[in-house]
Structure formats: structure tokens, C-alpha cells
Image 1: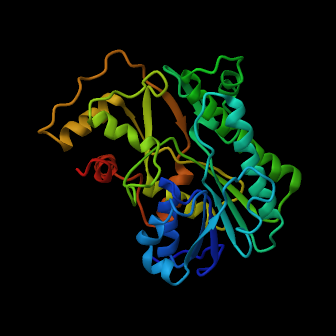
Image 2 (image 1 turned 135 degrees about the vertical axis):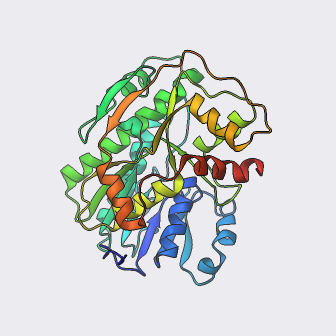
Length: 341
């Protein structure tokens, strides 16, 4: 199969934020292997040193470099890091806290900061923002919805900005609201500022699969090791999962960056839908000698759908891949580094 012509030529410099994270580090690997150079932003250079070991040949010839951005919310935070780059993947996020004032405004400010930096750098031609399914819809028990390009999760904003107290039960709604608000800021910027670069968004839910290093941050990746060790998931917040492999999510970021005809798209990168009992069945099949917790009773189904034709076509074009990665392989890979299985 002939390699498609990319919108950005090989050898170009790609800026990836939060490069120590699960998606960002895998995205770095895929770009480097395709012949691109990567500059990754990190909050702490010392804690990110494992990247130089994992990508030693690329670091040695400066195809991978790290940029110190200790606070990505401040104006001008990315002014140095963005110099000379052809494209930006803004993957980093702020984190988790039940207080919306500590998460939502900083997440929006970070998006604004990097968009303004990109708009001021003439070399930038493409910009990809990592959002989430929860920017478009709630994942509430019994939820029914069909997600389109115009779908937004208004409920998450209402829940997140409800009056205090801010107990731990608010963490999930605040995170969801931060994704809504940040993605909306991205599209507001595109509409109002009319930047010269193309913008696309990639929206996964639960991201599983192998981590490149034990120090790689993978918040949703902890769900499987917990379940393996007998700790049930928070089914009240996540009654079922749209689980996507980190390889697939990263490939869709690649396609959003390189595919010339993909412009102003919200690419839903959900992967496959599974109930928690189906996840348990896969674990039992993979590890038949281990005793797992019993099946869950009374968990409602989710009836959330979207048009998958575009992400599937993009994975075929840019990865010669037919469909989402096999779920059993994703589960097995997710457990590799965490518990050494």
C-alpha cells in the first residue's frame, strides 16, 4: 500500500505537550518512527528524563528534545517551545480536583495560551487538541444519545459549577466540565481569531494499552490493574467503558495532523464499548488461574452512538488498519508494565 501524502513533510518539527503522558509518549514514538522530529513539553525535566532513555537514538541525534514549561496556563508559556514547529498536539491537561476553580479556568487558560503562541508562530500549519467523549455527552447510567459534531455536555458544566461543598464525588464532573470548556475555547478561538493553521480535535474515553515506561502517567490505565487486584471500578461514574487502545488514539492524532482533507473535525476515538462484566470475562480468559471478583449485578447499559466512519477510514489510510485494535490485546498490553503480567 502506497504511503499517503502528508500535509506536513517528514523531517518537520512537531510540538507535543505533556509528553510524559500515556497518549503523548506513544504519539511521540509514532511521529519519530515516521521520520518526524518531536519537541515535547514537560513540567519537570528531571522527572521526564526516562524519555531520553526510551527514545535514546532519537534523543542522541536531537530528533527528540524536551522543553521546560512549568506552568502552561500563563500567557507566553509556550512562546519558546513553539518556535520553528510545523504542528502542535496539545495533549496535556491540568489534572483532577473537586474544586472547579482549580481545574476548569486553568485548563481553558492553557488551551488559550498555546493557541495564541501557535497563531504568533508563522511556521505552524496544523493544530490537534486532545479532548474527550465527555465533552460531547454524559456517560450516566442508562444514558441514550447519538453524538454529532454539534453535541456538547451541558450537564457536566451544571454539575461542576454547582455550589460547594466540593467533595471527592465532584472530581469526575469537574474533569468532564474542563474538557467541555477547553474544547469550546479551541473552537471559539478558531471562529473569532481565524488562525492560519488547520485545527482538529480527537476525543477518546478510557485509554488502555501498553505504557512505554513505568513512570508514564496513565490515569485511566489504572482501572484494569485495580480490577485485576480485586478493586471494583467506580461504576456510578463509569457504568461501562468505551475503551480505546493508546495505539489507536495516537494513530488518529497522526491522521488528524497529517491528512490534508481532515479540517475542523471532532474525531470521536472511542474504540469498543464494553460492560464491566465483559471486561471481567476477558480478564478471566487471559488469566484463567486467577480468581476475580464476581460479576456486577444491575448495572445499566449505555446507548451512546456516533458515526465511526471517519475515524475508521483514517486508521485504514494512515495505519493500514482495519478497525479498532483487538480488545484482548489491549487489556493484555495494559497490564504488562503495571503488574508485570
